[in-house]
Image 1 (cartoon, one colour):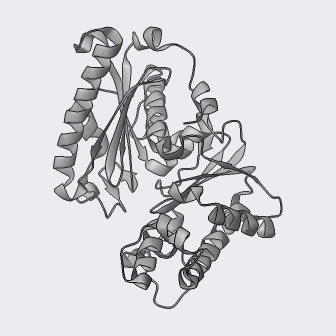
Image 2 (cartoon, helix red, strand yellow):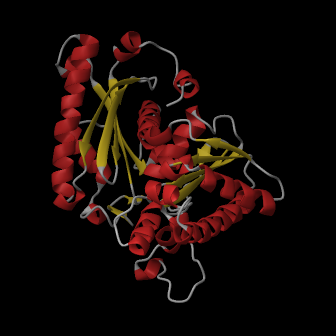
Image 3 (cartoon, one colour):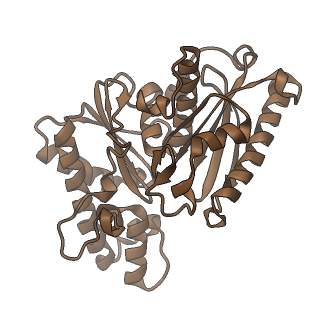
Length: 341
């Protein structure tokens, strides 16, 4: 998190704000589960991290999450109130963000999380932590919400957040609100069609653009080319000395750049913010900027995400803040925090 972003997280020191209670935010990532406690003004109090181990199934993942979350809450209470009992620093709200599309009765399109498709996450969190106020959201939309509220998209009327990581996704921000879509699936650019023979569309279980140009796909394609396991970061480094790798990446990045340019044409953003690990690759960023500059009627500003790898967890804090505010207004409903964003 940048110092500028941290400075926008709201007033109130840890002691005074924490006295009213705390929030628990959870980011269910592909390889790790990140957690944070925060004050009701959004200032972080403590953090923890455990491996996801998604193959163990949803029930086991949630059990370990509960155990780690309760331990973090106890540590936060000891450090900030000098006691470990819940009365000293009550839990006011819990929010979690996750891959996939969050629905009331399950999380769709999260193939790397077995059991997620039938997991009603909101009531599960309510039972796990015995708390009334709960919020849930898709991870990339939550990251965009954090950037819109406190980060690189703060004050921007029309913005675009593009996550360039193992997977690909985007979120449109209009007047500070993240466009959710009719089913919560707006901005899922990884499923966009390439128009090539034999591609597997969503109905066949595919995600054409993500499988062609996502970080995970690039690593797999370069690994197959070289005959050994290669990470996406190493692949970009190898492109400087290996023409075959450079050609593969050039084609994939050109494809990705065209899709981002078309997305920019659709919403006419004032600013495009890039998040995810591949946003740190200068060659990719320049390719995107050049494609958008060539296609767009009005060229947008560009900026790196203020919260970096922690954007989704920061988004979970914002979802918890919104759920808490809506609870005070008597307007809590499933998914209200992200739906209103």
